[in-house]
Image (cartoon, rainbow, N blue to C red; front, side):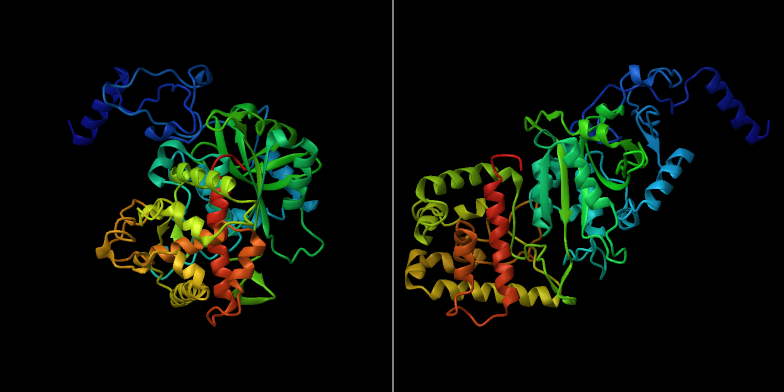
Length: 483
């Protein structure tokens, strides 16, 4: 028998016996935050009951992995974007100006690279749609946001297993320099949600002005008839005539973009996340890009050049927050001496502050290298400008020697910045001073940073220092509750 016919005969024989290795069995329901061990989508998979429309198949052979290829959208609650009805809704939305946010987002729409990365990918899509410069290399000479850069509030390996919560998403967005307006579903109304949808999706009077804000939703899939639990996605358009929103689903291997009734989407924001005991919700993420029309002058400073932090360190931020609340009055009576006392454990542990922040990777862009140098000069100048400040910090904490085994030597042995020889060297004294600024009110912080006696540096360096302090302050403020 010819070889080709022999192979065909073998395949027919195997098919007749139903032992082909690529059968697709039904799957149990799994949450978005439990599904990473299966090669499928971050929210819940399918229950046996939800698989009734699928052909029956024998159980997998021992050791075989269950695999899935897409899912049908529930036709009673969702309209596929590419269907004739979906295209008609889009045409109506476009005619009424409801696709203002669609085109920048669709240019950047991508599939989440990990089953539990729906939140990270949603944020990456928005950051790139808003043209935020990550100020770090992606590949080769190119700077571009990808999920691996979003490590200021999370452990990425942990996210692969657990996903992220509503508050962590807001923290990550804030760390990239976005203005964040986060609203839990239970703290809003359908009318308020509709207003925000219109504001972000509907074209302004000047259609030539690019969007500076986008809307994302954190919702429960089951409410809209889909398989899954918690999920994040951008909202790409709004059709006022049918009162539908366009969900640009990041899990395109499961569901493509689709229209959902606005009121039903709002209901999907209301269920509580069992990890936080708070409802899901929606966020407006904003970034105006440039200031005064000068493309070289960023009005936001989207990335901390000095520090990174992890959500897993919230416990020590909570301790410090309680310390501040018991030792001060709204940030008005905080002193550098009291900050040093806490973070050195009464001058017994000079590396304790490493529990709060970690040095960033050394920048590669010339502008960023100069900015780091200017910010450090400013910090050192601000410490020296006040004798009381200088005397409050133990002299040994001004050293950056790795041989000291304090900072950054011990503190940089982390999964976040595990790059030997490439970690920014910054002294514990400098870190303590930035933490001190973060502990003050915004007004007091600005007064100190703009002290005329400080180093003669450009105002952009002063604003960068204020941004560094603001990010630490934000992490402290939100360490014990959702936003």
